[in-house]
Structures are given as structure tokens and as C-alpha cells.
Amino acid sequence: MFRILCCIENWFGSNSRAASQALRRLGCDVLEIDQQNFFPRFSLFTSRAAARLFRPRLIREFNEHILSVATNFRPDFVLIFKGAFVTAATLRSLRGLGIPLYNFFPDTSAFTHGDLVLEGLPEYDCIFHTKFFWFADASKRLKLRAGCFLPHGYNPDVHRPLQLTGKDIEEFGCDVSFIAVHSEYKEKILDRLLALRPDVNLCLWGNGWTERNRSASLNRCVKGYGLLGERFSRAIQAARINLAIMNGPRPGASSGDLTTSRTYAIPASGGFMLHQRNSEVLELYRENEEIACFDSVEELAEKIDFYLAHPAERERIARAGRLRCVPAYSYDNRMAEILRWHGEHFGGETLTTHELVTGAPR
Image (cartoon, rainbow, N blue to C red):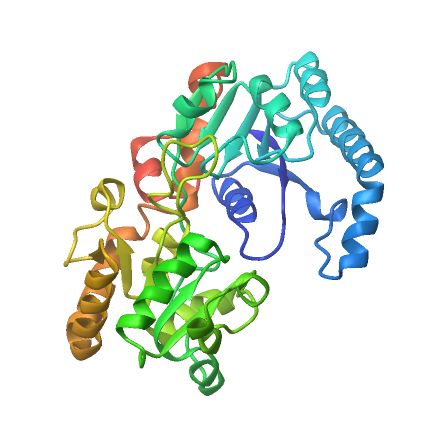
């Protein structure tokens, strides 16, 4: 099987770590470069300011490290997640070594992550993007080599039913839960929800809500911190209803999110999911059988009322949603698609149909 160099963020629960571990389960020899060893996330303003001051030097050291590791490891290909700090010069040097280059790009727009990303994207042999509209949007301004739509998935190491403790119920138990980074678009939807249902027991988890929330009615719902790893899954299980609100369009994108990682993480963890209705999610799950959906805030409020009053129906849909999601939508299967693409375009082993459907390790 393949020898792969992955450039990731290796914190427990990250999508890039999920992908790296999936490649190992598929039998690959994976060597990781953890981006956060060079670019840690600081919370204090003074620390962030110091990091910005030294960023050019850190970027140089980071790229030198990538080249050094690749020269010694001699991978069959390099897989980089987004590549916010990887320079085009480094990518050209890797190409000079005869190494195929792939990018897993998780966001809606290619044009909101700085110049290094824009300069680097044309150097990849293929960009595996999680939004079906992304490649057409990016190609309007960038000359890209190839692209392949590859949705997010769930991480079997993290997103699975767990035995909840009394502390879990006390900390995470609620009627309605939303776990996501703050955005103005999400805030407006939830503020309107509370205007319609002021007594709903809503909990908001995720970065940015404490600092950027402007809704006075939402203040009581904000928990003030993100949930990582198994705490994420425990919170999903402890909530009666888990919301999947997408992001609106960003500059350079023709659409907002239609699915995200929570589209898969909630059902895989055994949670009941109430998802914004769109064509993409309805290709993945059957509405009212495996998930519930909403369009307007008024419909969202009505669905919350209904499913809080019908726990047996809620549990039936959650069970069916998990069966639909697991194992078909795992990161194992997503990474198997990358291996298949590589095998078809650069030679080497390819995966069987059975392995692509079940995620069975080689």
C-alpha cells in the first residue's frame, strides 16, 4: 500500500487527524507533520501579536521541514489539508522530487485564506474539495490542475455512541444543542428562534460565541467554549435535538455550506439531527425517516415542538440515521476515494468495491 506524508492539525477530533488515521486503517504507511507544532493557537492577544511578528520566520522553517521530511521519507504522495502555510515554492520543489501533491480543502471559498493558499492551489495535482460548487468557483480565478468532490465524513474513533455519565448529563443535557463556531448568519437564525420560542432550553457550544455574539437573548445559551474529541460526541448524545445550521456564502463562493462535518458526526454519534433542508443532504438521508429538516425559522420552531413532544419518534429517526451513516459515510471511505484516484492516475494498488463501501481495512 502507499507511503503518505500528511500535513495536518493533529488535535483529537480534527478532520485532518480523522483522515490520517483512516489512511492507516486502510493499510498505508502515514507520516504526519503537525502544523500546530509551528503555528499554535493562542488565546491571549499578546501571544497572538507575538506569533504574527514571527510568522514569516515560522513559515520558512515549516516549509523547510516539509521538504526535509519528504526527502527522507520518500512518500508516494503528499496530502496537505488546506495548506494555509505551505508555499508554492515548496510545492514546486516537491514536484521536482517526483512526488504527486494533493490538497483536501474543507471550506466554501478558496479566496478567504490568504495569498499562500491562492498561490499554492494551482500546484496540486488534485484538490479534493468538500463543496460540489467549489471547483467551478475557484477555477474562475485560478488555473487548477484537477478537482474531485469529496464530502466530509465521520470519524469512527470519535463519533460513536458512548456510555454517558451523570456529569455528562448535567453538563450537556438540554432540549436543543448547537455545536459550531459562531457566525453572524447562525446567530441571526438562533436569535429569531428564541423570539418564537423564548423558553426553549437551547445550549450553544463553540468558539466565538462569547466574544462575538450580539444577541442579548442568546447570552443565557452560550456555554463559552468549544467541544473537542469525545466531549463533542457526548454532548450530541445528551441533547434531545441537535441542530445542523449551515454557514451562509463567503466571498468568492456561489453558495453557502450544504453539508458540513456535523452532517455526519451527529448521526454517527447516535444523535437526532435537525438539518437545514437542501438537495445535498436529501441525497444522503431520507427526510422524516433518518433525519428531520427545516427551511424557515418558523418551521424550525415547529419541528422542535413536535420532536420534543414525541421522544419515541425522535429515537427511531436517530437509530435509522446512524444506520444510514455508519459505515458508508466514514472518513475511511472518503480516504479510500483518494487512494483510488491516485491509483488510477499515478499507478499502484487500487481498492475493491467492497472496501469502498464498507471501509474494511486492507
